[in-house]
Length: 560
Image (tube, rainbow, N blue to C red):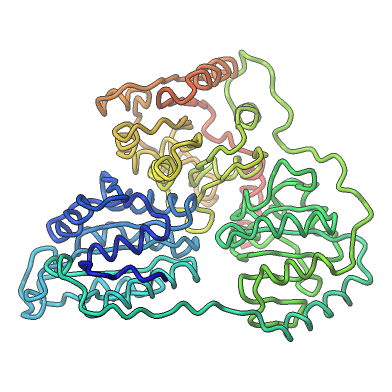
């Protein structure tokens, strides 16, 4: 960490440190305990405050911003504000997203005297919320002029190293105080244990002697730790097919001839499943073995045939090698002496074939191929939890595309504010949002934020009459009885008007109408926010992945 302290106030120094990390916008919501933080930021050159409609949404936006730019920051007020943001911060923790959450708290004297202040639990305990955050962040600190030069760099370093959110709280009266100590801790760069690395390479060489078919799997930590380049180089050197896990989509260039698709166990493409499960040798990079990535446990991967590469650990078969950095083992494996003779061949993807009938009603089989066809290089694709998340996982992304979804945490409503955060993170890239009617009703306010901040994404709202994803997952009760999965009918094309702005809108029910809407949206060339409502009459229409999952769940239920 460079020395930025100088003759700076605590607040100025905090923003200096964030600016040094490339943060040029901070999300949040004003509150009376964070006024000094916001007043300092208002006068600060180089960082803009982005006001969210509520703290939860601002947290989601900050999460997506970090996925695009590498790190983000969020400012909330004490108690009510930070508790509203809890879900977003927990999601960032679950999804390995580095986010600096800054909380403005009551005056230091009020806290010392345990006054019964508003926004508290009325018990004089001003540390209770920080204690809550201890469980959903990797680091918490109470900032003072005496410790800020030490604690702020430490928090940022931990967020960068662990790819997790951190929490900093500062009393409103201390933000504008000068730093009383300028001593900073130096960063300790983790180093690879050379002996462990060499032993692992020899172990892998021995395994490869009898290998005919190898495959490479990429997952979420490939993205978070920026391992895409060495993974691509390794794949090309070994000449092996590459698949991503559900949570790691876009961790490998999906336009590359060696990419075969998302591995989804019994639910995904059978060609991909066969290729992965019949391999003699698997290299898995940054994998999280969640129920999502293992497709409800239907994935069949032999750990004895696997090399599992994590950011700073390595597992070869049953043997573990500690303190081996991912970049170094990935580079070492390029010279391992193995190259697969058999080429990947021509790969077909689930949505390569277009359903042409323009008069036919919309369905998953027809709108996903159209979505795949409209995507462009370097797009940012934001996908909501729900039926869209399963269908979009099978859509082949163009070169340079960034895919944002909460594959693990799966908080419904995440995607709309996340799309807003992505728009702010890079105003030069096109953002496309794919969300559902149920999901957008949770966080719709950020459409207003998009319009207010000049963001012009293309928004697709899938109107399939309620929480279809929940109807698929609940196999115990008939759909007709699931009244709790029904939602009010909204006129989604009137949202921009309700928020006092203009947008291009279209409500489509057939393939032809969708084709026309897409053409019009493309022709806008980011001149306006575009909102396309996809009306699907069959509420149980869904992508093949989800259909297979439901059949599996039904079978499991009968076995009970």
